[in-house]
Amino acid sequence: MTAASPPEVLRAPLVVEFPFTRSLGPVQSAFLTGLRERVVLGVRTADGKVMVPPVEYDPVTAEEIRELVEVGTTGTVTTWAWNGSPRPGQPLGTPFAWVLVRLDGADTAILHALDAPGPEAVRTGMRVRIRWAGERTGAITDIACFEPHGAGATAQATPHDGQFADAVTGIVAAARLDYTYSPGRSQTAYINALADRRTVGERCPSCHKVYVPPRGACPTCGVATTDRVEVGPVGTVTTYCIVNIKAKNLDIEVPYVYAHIALDGADLALHGRIGGIPYDQVRMGLRVEPVWTEGGRHPDHYRPTGEPDADYDAYKELI
Image (cartoon, rainbow, N blue to C red; front, side):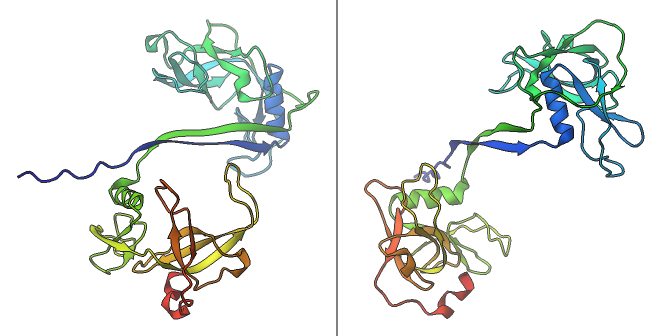
């Protein structure tokens, strides 16, 4: 007789993305507007070094920096790494090198992509130049990439007033993170149990607290939790908040109540929405039970059971 194999740990692709909006100070505004005009600006620090990309405060003295200088559009590779599998949104769609380039007249290097046929064509010390994007808007992507450049005269840093017509004062950057998420052994068991309309936690073998959702280890004792315990389904509202702002793509009318609920037998409160009662009648100590929708893999919300409220001493340690 062979032992049953453990259930497969869940995995799923996850994408986190949002538009990041920020305003620009005078230094960053001049730098990005300059890129739109095919001009690369840096700043000169108190000790005379030229930093590209520019910063607003001296990294040594922390003093504000405002002395802008123009540097060259050619430079030297100081170090590099080959990228054989470009990701979506990266500067080039074909294999390329990530390079740190010290532009002529600068004392620091800028990170960007180098268009090269292969890693054998890239070396530290090689000369490169900026390949400008066909359409420029005032962003770092106005530098499409770097490309190899033969030997030639090197430029020197020259003063620049940073003044351009229609200066860029703010940017919106699309932030995106693609990865595969796994909840781990303990939460896989928890999620699978929810699909059967059961709530399962894990008990610490040392302090005997039951954690729901389970974490795989006791955060207090630092030991693995392997003893599974079914809790609830009834629980107690320990604390709550009233939500008045409607979330995008969430079909719930405001106001509604989101609460911490300590299920009977659990030593950790979980989150849940409260329904079946006016929002202004929700209170600490309210006894609630889960409501499942047809085919749902987790409770849609919790509603009052009609029991008397729990005594404060019964849940005060779980707030």
